[in-house]
Length: 158
Ligand SMILES: [Fe+2]
Image (cartoon, rainbow, N blue to C red; front, side, top):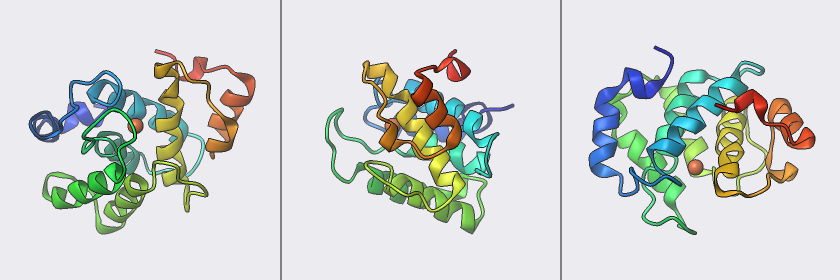
């Protein structure tokens, strides 16, 4: 199966128990699935690692405690992922990328590799869910930038 939520039910069940906003439509499971879908799409066009991107989707916001400005939630999500590495099928390098992607996802610029660029763009492309207009300065991959410039998001529409 293509998506991590289908392949790692143990992870999903654990997040359902431990993530405060799991059921939130803004920062919860629904958003995470969209981020995974967006990220896997973007990874087709650069060297992004799909497995890391899928994991980013479920960890980056999982330790949020509110829906607004929540300082440190990326760092908490990254640490939570490392703490749970035994239920993830990632090697040390992939875990390191996952941690960095989570930690820097809020306001991060100049991603150090294609994988992190896909993660951040995938999250930021879902800004449309809160009716905000994407701002080109926050996008790093060519494909996401092209969608923002053309204001055409049909490639990632459901
Ligand atoms: Fe997010």
